[in-house]
Length: 302
Image 1 (tube, rainbow, N blue to C red):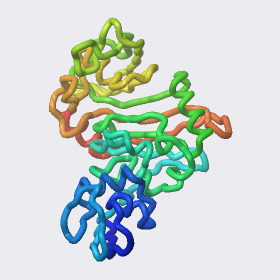
Image 2: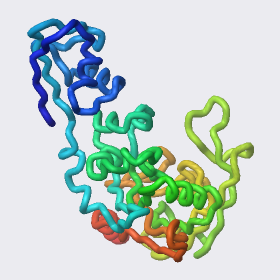
Image 3: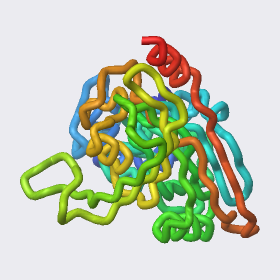
Image 4: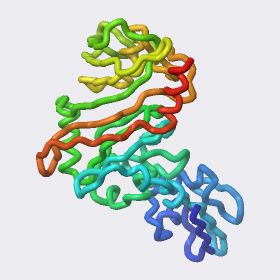
């Protein structure tokens, strides 16, 4: 946390307005969040954002500075050039905050729990200042899914990569461990996915959107199997939904009925695509993390 302390002098002014003038480049909405979360106080007490400061009021701000969110970020970087940033997302961390205000004011990502976006904002602030939407995000992974994510560092690269995902030009490979062993070594799941009226959970639904997943059994355990998975479309939770639909949910996937495991055993292994600047075929890979391999080793013995 970065601590800011100031004794106010001047004409009466709202607290949130004053915070935008501290030289920290706080937006008005971010200033209000600081006040609401008790990180900006007046004379040692929490006030409303509309509180009017008077002469000699002491304003203290605890600003979630970059250091905390940035910690360990460089260890996650797999590849980086002027157009791309590829990182290895750990399982258990969300890609971005639920509240959408970070998209307008990226500094808001520093409030609340650490996310991948808060780490990027801290470690690569130029990506927030360069006019790139959503800090360069072009796809996402579920909180409990680990593995490769690619981000754009320029607006042109972001458009090209986003188009590639939308037009199904990105070759995606995942590794997942499922309950049970599929009858055939290779399989194709072609089942539409959507959210039926009255249901919160996305599922296979006859009126949903087209969704196609291919898989190959790579290894077998006792009543479980490791699959290489290729989602040919990019629907939310597609892999998890499709595998659960055929009776082989991902191990550790509580939402879709997977048996208990120390973590959800789904990992984004690689992406193959044309580089947005050079046009060259590019393959990026995030090897299986040690915790994933350790759980699989244990499951095979059971």
